[in-house]
Image (cartoon, rainbow, N blue to C red; front, side, top):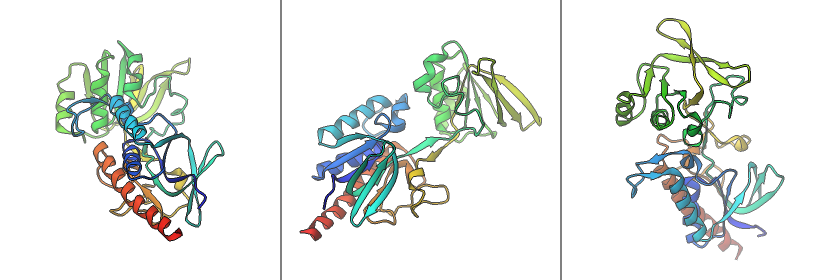
Length: 313
């Protein structure tokens, strides 16, 4: 069969890179496609303290370690923004935004998730103008300034703590009166002198300066039924993620939240198409669970590809 690769892995986060390592070590010709720097959300994380073997490691360092491992076992790296997946008999076809196509016997989707915006008209206009979704990337721009972090989960708590290394004052705003993050993170936030926790406030609209930069955020105070304006130099929303599955819209493999439905073998409802990591419908999304998914998907893809090759011979 005329294909370029045995296996194409779409996505270069921990799930995709683990899959690349396992599949390459199994002797498959593997390509890993990524539209950004390899590592996914890891590369935007300051410190990772719950990945086995590392009591503490910088996210960029762990990303680089994983990527170097994929290269050492022979996985090929492709830069590309996937727009769709096609099928021609036993051939699977990846279409990219630049008009290129890549063919393989099997595909693993490991595209992860993207940060959820506040849903205001200026969401994209304010990027780089005070609005950021990555404290590690942009925290240094807010030295001795005031910033607002929105969210009550672990990401919001951890990034608020990280931002105290730069900002003079961090307002952590949550929509409810309780956090969703781990107790240890809550305790660190609540005792930090630079962090002010504001509860029961819901974002209402941005405050924008005459130059088009962020000037703050207006919130609806659920306790007083008032709109409250909070001036700030920077804003970091951490209110959840959505799966990066737009390119799978015409395939009947997504749940109502548009996560990919798989079985315990990471198989979708389409033969030769697997999924792994945060893009999958599941309860826990962590680096270690993404790596678990990637290893299973690669192993099952190997069995599937070997069966196809045996059938041809």
